[in-house]
Structure formats: C-alpha cells, structure tokens
Length: 450
Image (cartoon, rainbow, N blue to C red; front, side, top):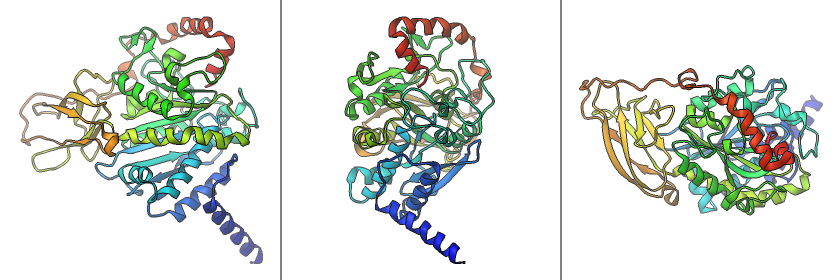
C-alpha cells in the first residue's frame, strides 16, 4: 500500500512538472504519453486525447486534438492534422509537434492568432506515427539508422496504396492501417507530415505513370497552384527554408519541390491523403541531420514556429458548405466538382452533406451532382479565407426531392480503377539515373532516405 501511494505521488508529480513547461530534449514514447495525458487533463475544455491504433510492438499512436469542440466534428469546422516521426529516426518533427502543442495550449485565450485557430478549426496532432522506430534509433545519427523502418522492417512512407502503380508493396502495416482508417473516419481538409534529412517543403504528386499529369518532369495534380501556395506558405514563414540552400549542394528554389521531380516515391502518404482522403497534404523536411543533438532543438523551434502556425491557417482557403435537399436534409456522397480540376477521385460530401474545397482567391465554377437529379452549376467568387479564419460558406440546395434526370453517381475510387497504364516501373530507373547525373551520389543518398 505504501509503495502504491509513493508511485501515485510520483505520477502526479510528473504530470505537474509537464504543466510547468516542456523541455527541449528528446522524449521517449512513455514520456510523450504522460505529457499528452497531462495536457488533456489540464486543458480539458479545448483538448482531447485519443489513440488511432497501436504499433507492431503495441505502443499507442496517440493523437491530441485541440478545438472549441474537441470531442467531435461540428458542421462547418474544418479538420486539420499534423503527423510526425513517420520514419522513426527522423526526430525533429516529433519534438516540434510537442512544442507546438505546448505553445497552443499556453497561448489559447491570450494570443489572438492561436485563439482564432483553435476556435475556428479542429487540430489533430500525431507526434509519432512510428514509435517503435524511434525507440530503435540511436542518437545522434545524421544520415540513416534501422529506426527509419517500423518493427517489421517496412518503410511506412512506401506502404500506402498508390493510384499510379500496381507494384505490390509490403502488406499494409498496423501503423499504416491506423492512419488510413483515421483519414477515412474524419473529414480532414489539410495536413502535413514532418520528416528530416534536408530542408524543403514537398508537394504531390510523388509518383506518375507517365500520363497527362507529367509536365516537364513535374507530376502535376489538378490543384497544383494550391499545393505550390501551401508549400511556399511554410517555406516563407520558416526562417531559412525559402532560401533553398540549407544542406550542401542540393538546392530547392523557394525552398519547395514537386515530389516526383525530386525523386519517384511509390506508396507515399501525401498522395494517398490527396487522392483518396480528399485531404491536401505536403511533406515538410525540417533538418539536414535526421537525429541531431538535443541542444539544437530550441533553434529548430524558433525556425519552425511561425511556419507551423501559418500553415494551419490555410485550412480556411477556398469554400465550404453543405449539399441539402429542399427540406434542409444533408445529402451525403454528392459529387462536388470544380470545372477545370479533374481529380482522380471525385470529391464527395461526407455523412453530414459537407464539402470543403481548398482554392486560391478567384472565380470558380462548381458542378454538383446527385444521382437521379439535374446537376447544379454555380460560379462563385472565392475570397482569401485565411485572413478571416473562415472559408467562403455556400450551401447547394436541390429544390426537388424527386428524380428529374438520368445522372448517376461518379464511379467509386479504388486503386484498380486508376492504374491506366503501369509505366511507373519503367519510368523509375531512367528518372533515378537523371537525378544521379544532376545531383550527384551524395545528394541522392539524402534523397532515398527522406
């Protein structure tokens, strides 16, 4: 009984110490768990803690959510996420997300930007997608360690379904499946995953099958302009990323790059988010050294703090709303398309009839399709939503509940539907050879480990 009391007091003491401040050090999985629990306990009015699953070795994949309504999705409130430590030996992002949480909870109600971010969106933070890999990594290690992979020796950023390739990857890992299920369970609008090995913001597509998306070596998505804006938002709010010359001879104009133009990646998470999750995601490489000394963490935080905040604010780009019937009932699975942007998987409304569409300011024509009804067409002027912490709100209301046309639902989206020609495998070898010639062996060594 005495021992139990002592241990309970020690646990309470550790919870109290976290509230006083998060130190600039590397934190193991248990320390992160205790820290997140303490945040959730002490800031319970606007935070909530949940797990999306477990790693191979049974470690929880903890997510802290912050928002005015942290426990559940609310219509009109966009969902945002940050994912860190997908590669277990790339550790800076893991710590940056912990310090982001610390900064947000301590400045809510005191700082106007933080307060408006939390009140206007629902922010999910997964500090470590690969806790087993982190525990297997040995500091410091700038280039590579076995901790990159999960416990089954699988690279999680090569483990997602890929619309451009039929090349079989390893069986879907528990960590990958947890994230895929998470993406399907929430209406995420915007996301970023944090890596290390260089300093750059990379955007989709990461792959190509040599189709119309491939233009001058760039695998362009239908929302290429938005992705460039998102990547530049981070790079120019970062203290040095925008210079593009952080890690030796390899340079990135404006501190950004198209993923495929940099190097081909099959089975990546950002393409999966964008194509199947209706969630715009970019990849943020935050450090030349994958596992740098802990005494550099304070500097990394100063470099990234403003950029992390500015990027979250972009969840308010474009337009949002619902598709409703004449009685005001939401219509799920309605197709909401923007003319001139032919997404591989058509964007559909969620179970609440909601849609979110990230768009830069300008004039756009929307076509909304509900099976058996005449499509609805509307042109909207889109303002700069992030300035006001809200996208334009517009509801599409179908005036008749009876079928009036032969229109049908858009084809469901699967990996099989969109592997039109599997040129990916043949493209990879020459593409990699060109990179070798242009960048040199040392640069490629960094690329393949990102």
